[in-house]
Amino acid sequence: MPSTLAPSVRFVPLSPVVLQALLDGELAAARVATGVQLTDWFISDDITWLWRMRLDQIAADPGAADWVACAAVTVPEGTVVGVGGFHGPPDSAGMVELSYGVDPACRRRGYARAMVRELLRRAATEPDVSTVRASISPENAASLATIVGFGFDHVGEQWDEEDGTELLFERPAS
Image (cartoon, rainbow, N blue to C red; front, side, top):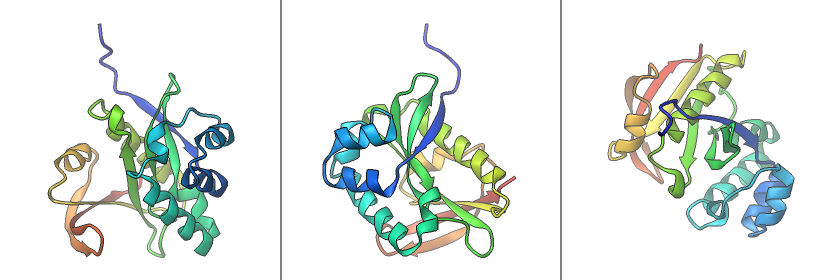
């Protein structure tokens, strides 16, 4: 009988060394450095653009390394199911923006919600964070459904140069 319990995840940081290994296609080295079994998705064209962006971000602001890139690992099984973090450290107003993605082989099993739950837990423990934001394309039904029930309010929209129109949702960190 399948479990009816919601999945849980923990986050394993992806250091700049790991991000560079992933960009270089060195999955075995990235696995050793993280201590988790990163999947082939971590070196696929679907996600490597993110590693380049995060490396550039960390180069510009080394403090971002603690915020922007982590592997999502199931608890207690230890299966790597995706990536999560924030778009950066808290801004001057105390806002952080969620960032998460589920390995296509692991989708539709509640892992995105588990990532959001864990990211919100972390935000609530950070004294410099007062607001958590999610920006989602109006066409992304899966992500819109993922944040339901977490107390987000629709606060507006923005134009993103890469993603087009995004709906903005915010909630208090605590």
